[in-house]
Amino acid sequence: MVAFSHTQKILSEVLIWVQLLTALVALFYLPQLKNSHWKWLSYYCCAVFLMEAFAKWGLKHHPSSISKYYDFFVIPIEFIFFYWVYAIKSLNRPKLFWIIVGIFCISFLPYFTIIHKPGMMLSLSYTVGTVLLMFLVILEIFKQIKSEKILLFHTNYMFYINIGIILFYVGTLPFFSFYNLLLGEPDLWSIYYTFFLVANNLMYLLFTAAFIWGKPNTY
Image (cartoon, rainbow, N blue to C red; front, side):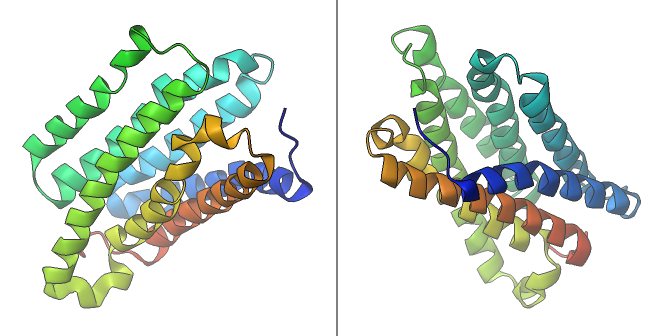
C-alpha cells in the first residue's frame, strides 16, 4: 500500500477547495456569460465540484465504488465536455466531435470482454481519452497561431483552458497510462502523484483566471 507524504495530503485536501473557488467564481461571472457558450464552462466547473465532493464525502465509506464512479461517470463527462468545447465550439467541426466520442466510447469495450484487473480500465480509457484531447489541443493551437486575435490571448478563454489541459491531462498521461507499473516503483509513483495534485490544482486556478480575465467574444 502506498504511503502518502504530508505534502501530498495537503495538496489533496486543498484541491476540493480550489474546485469550490472555481465553481463560486464561475457562478459569479455566469450572468455575464448568459449569451455565450462559455456559460456551460460555468456549469461544468460547478458540476465538477459536486462530483468531486460526492466522491470525497459521499463515497467515503464505500471506497470500492470510487474507481468505477470515476471510470464510468466522472472521467467520461470531463473528456466529452472538452471534446465539445474544442471540436464543436472552437473548431466548428461537429463530425470530428462525434468521431472522437465514438473512439472514446470504444475504449470502454475491453472492460466487458477481457479486462477485469483493478486500475486497468482507468489506464486504458484515460490514455485513449487524453490522446484524443491532445489531438484537439494541437488543432486549437494551430488555429490560434493563424488568427490575428492571438495578440488578445490574455482575454481568450481558450488560452487558459489550453494551458490547463496541457498541464494536467497531457502532463499526467504517463502517470495513468503506466499506473500499475509505477505502483511497483514507490518513489517514482510518489513523484508523479505529487505532480498530478499540483497540476490538478493549477488547472482549476487557470479556469478561474479564464472567468476573471477572459472575454466571451475573444475567439
